[in-house]
Amino acid sequence: MTIGICNDHAGVDYKNRLVAMLEKAGFKVVNFGTDSTVSVDYPVFAHALAEAVEKGEVDRGIALCGTGNGMAITLNKHQGVRAGLAWSSEVGRLVKAHNNANVLVLPARFISFRMAASIVRVWLSTPFEGGRHKRRIDMIPCK
Ligand code: RB5
Image (cartoon, rainbow, N blue to C red; front, side, top):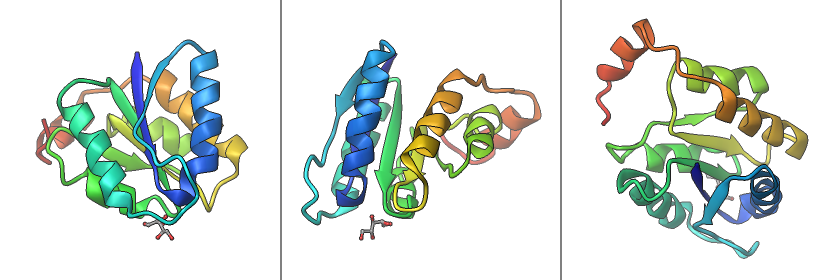
């Protein structure tokens, strides 16, 4: 599986640590930046990741900013993206099981790295439950 990852200046440290974790686990990771802590505009990076998801260049995405909201709001403007914000392992499980999020958004300034890593692991290993959740997703709409 290929995972795209993007972040603003608030997420660069966790991004680097997540990339190392994912590559060690055997995932191919495509980094859409930013790679420095200099203040940047999160939509630039969110749009780049979203376009890669929509084109099928990556299978899933992970996005990080301070609260996660800027990334989530921007990503969800794209029809091929279902981005979900998670701040605990249980929300990470539910955002896949119920919402089938193809992009996971993390609030880097409000969770520990240990929690971020746990959320990523559970989101990657949880299957979508389908059923009533598919019906609801089909009503959004999103590709
Ligand atoms: C950057 O200061 C901060 O606004 C950004 O990381 C994010 O939280 C926006 O939603």
